[in-house]
Image (tube, rainbow, N blue to C red; front, side, top):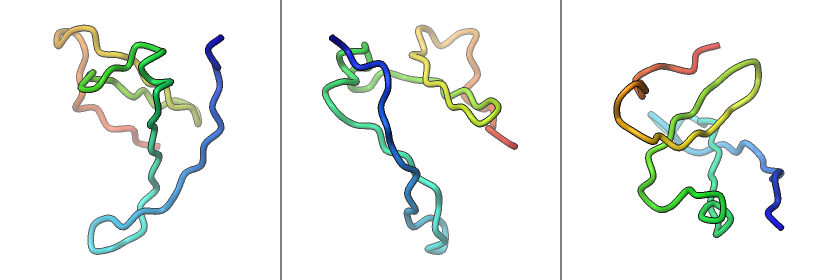
Length: 70
């Protein structure tokens, strides 16, 4: 049975000019179980304190240039 929830943490990682930058890393075989194979393009939607990761099925109709601004 696939797990539908994962508990993770936002970590700090060195960014531009060594400034701490919020970082979330997703890795594991469970990504393949959910259809996220290596090199799968994704869209990250940001809304009301929630991130949604969606497989990008086609290049058309989805803009990857949009910023997740607060």
